[in-house]
Length: 250
Image 1 (cartoon, rainbow, N blue to C red):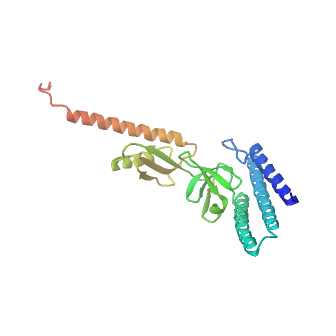
Image 2: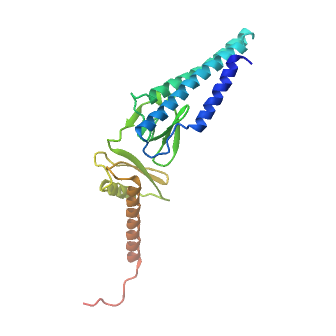
Image 3: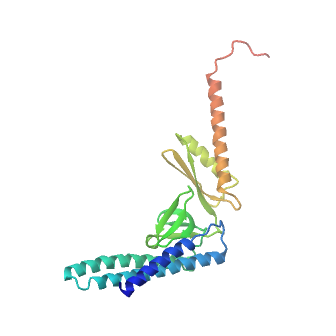
């Protein structure tokens, strides 16, 4: 086995071990700036190491097919070169995202590749973003660099999305939800309230006031819907009750 193949195997093993021992994410809700800098440095080191390993693999492939025919050598060169270019572009995009010029720190809200959420971790080739609905999106660094990337600072309004599920949504119910959200003390009035509906899920997008939480706002909306349903059921019962035959007392 050649020296480059040994280097490739050892480097891949070290990267795998480092990924298990030191994951590039933080389990803390609000990590310290020192820990964020450490995780960014670890992720940047992985990106650089991945580029070096891909270069070594590219050289090993060219060396292995040096004695092949011209057609085979050109085919392998184009295929290996394409793979190396993808890894290199993704690594450069990761270094750009992790640089202090962008400021994409853990816990900050971002808009990347048409996905809004909070940065959860820096993967080897992808950025982990947790959405307001609780989903985790894995976005390749190259895809983020090629599209608009917005970082929402903590000192500005915190934009959140609250999804409510019901069997059926009426237009007046959506208007009522929007009115409750607009008048809510948990809302930041600097940004408007947007309500969208898709199948059984109604989503409210708004900014939270300082010190407010999305969980408390969700509880307020659910209570308001429950009160409205109870009032509607009581009104329907009164309308459906037969009139009394006894005269009312004066």
